[in-house]
Every structure is written in structure tokens, then in C-alpha cells.
Length: 409
Image (cartoon, rainbow, N blue to C red; front, side, top):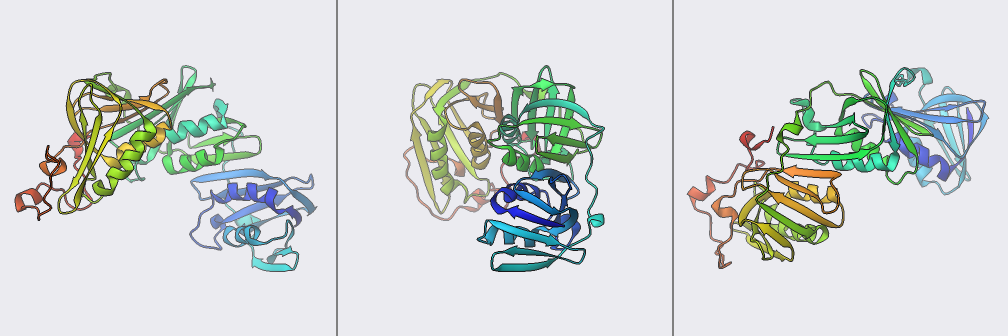
């Protein structure tokens, strides 16, 4: 196989493919990309980590001699990114590969095409829905924002559910303490629940961000495909049941906060400087109707932080605690603009959404406030060592103030 490559054009497809390759060992077949150059002058790239796969068409390639080879990502990818020549020559024999870029010449080992794992084919899969790639990117980014790190049990904690029904698609995730739900209208061919790993979906969302292409989602019993004009991604389905999240959604609301998202986000970044030093990572939000919003954080022996923000508060007075990181995750998913936050009570669900739209909901459970989490009314502090009885109330390192009873599921 011999290819004349326009480096910048080729790199776009290469970088898409390498995201699905494993990084375990440099010369393993799943740490490599299968390059197939046909007599029709079309070159395809395939990569997989056995859970996710991609097959895409590379542009900027002139096929001098057709063929196929498995090339290690760590070698060829790095060379293509670092050489200065815009036109390079890739020459691959069964024993080795070589890259010639002006006065720069490199040789590297290759694997046989027969050693590359077979990527699942979508030819027999059912079409589920069709939508714009940029819309899918937004849907997945928002809908997966409440997922946790993948865990063995329960399996749904590291997943995102894609559900098609009633002429639209929803993306939902939860870790038991919070939930994110994004939805949009699209062309639905089949009502289906697709449970997929969140990390793979988030990588897919980054790839499709800003794209003007249309993506068709297809599925069979084990795999889901996302097909674009020049690329097809596949992700293995998770064999697990997703919680019945709809049963816990309600409209109970005692207090409503309306505020500009960027103002609140900036304040929390400053609050977090103190809050993140505490085991529970807790802040206290003080809601008084008709007054400004007050947010505080207190770390015994270290210091305090306080923020006052202009806003509109309606309803009842409330002092309520939250894990700062969880709250920030919701704000990031909401994006810019005015937002509405609805508080049911100090122990019930809190809902965050955009002011002018109901296409995204982020719900989280409050954290229990202990005496050392709140600041005195006179804002005075003495950072003396915490008494023993106070220390016993602080969770152990790595814990927060949530427990299983707090979980909405």
C-alpha cells in the first residue's frame, strides 16, 4: 500500500479514529488503526477498543497502490502531527511502514490487516431516529451531566439512557443524588430505549459538536450505531435496567430563584476555594424573598467565603446546603443566559432549568447542613481547632454528607 497524503486533511479523519483506539500497548491491534485504500481512490480508517468503534472516510489521500495495514496510533499519529511538510508519502509493506516527509523519514512496525478485530456492521440494524449531529451533541452533553464514573454495580450509574418516543428523543442520566434530562424533537422511526456508557457518548458528543451533518441512529440487540455521511460510530449497549426516573419528577416548589447563570457560576468558583477543602464539599444557600441571594462556605481552621448576588427570590425563606461540584455540573450543562432554580424544601429535590425553555432539566438533592457548615450571623470567625464533638460530625475523608436515604431512587 502506498499513499500520497495531504497531511492536514488526513489528520481530521485520523484524529476522529484515534479516539476510539485503546492506549494499552503500542503494538496491540486495538491500539492501532486499520487503513484500507481501495482501487476507487477511497481510503477508510477503522479503530476500536472492543466497546466502541469508528469507521470513517479519509480526505486528502491519493491512492498510488491499494492495500490495507494496521498502523500503531502512537507512532504514525505523532509523526503526522509533528512533521512540517504538508504532503507526505506513506508506504507500507507486510513487514514495515515508512513515512517520508521532505527530509524527514521514519520507519515503524505494522500489523497484518487480518489481526485487526472485526467491527460490528450496521447493515442488519433497525433505524431508530434521525437528527442533526450538533443537536445530538447538545442532547448528550446535557443529558449525561449527572452520570458518575462507571461502576460494576449498579451498572446504570455510568450510563446515559437515550429514549425515543412521541416524535422526539430524550437523554437521561443519574447517580442517585442528581438527575439530568435533555430532550428535543426529531424524526423517530422506532420507539426504543438505548442504554449506553456515558464516557463513550461524551466522546461522541465532542466529535459532533458544531457539525452541520445529519446523523442516523441505528440499533440491534447489542450495539448502537451513529451514522454520518463520512463516518459511522458504534457503541455496545449496556445490559441493565435504568431506573423509572419519571416517578420522582414533580412540580412541588416552595421557593423560586431567578438569576443569571454566569453570575452564579462565577460566584461558585470563588466559594469553591473554601468549600473544596472540606470533606463534604458543602456550601449553604440563603434564600430570603425580596432580598439578594447569599451563598456561604465555611471550613473550620481554614476560613470562610461569602457571596451576595442580585436576583429574584419568590416564596418562603430557606437555608439549604449543596455539594458545590454537583451544583456546578448543572450550571455548566445549562449554558449561558437566565436560569430558574426551584426548591421544594431543605430535604427535597431542587430543579434547575433555563428561563425560557423546558428542553433541559437538572435535578439534585440537597446536602444536610451541620453546624460547622454555616457561618455566624455576625460573620465573625475564630479559626481555633475544632472540638472533638464537632469532628465526629464531619464525614470521613472522601465522603460527602449524602447517604443512600438521600438518593431519589
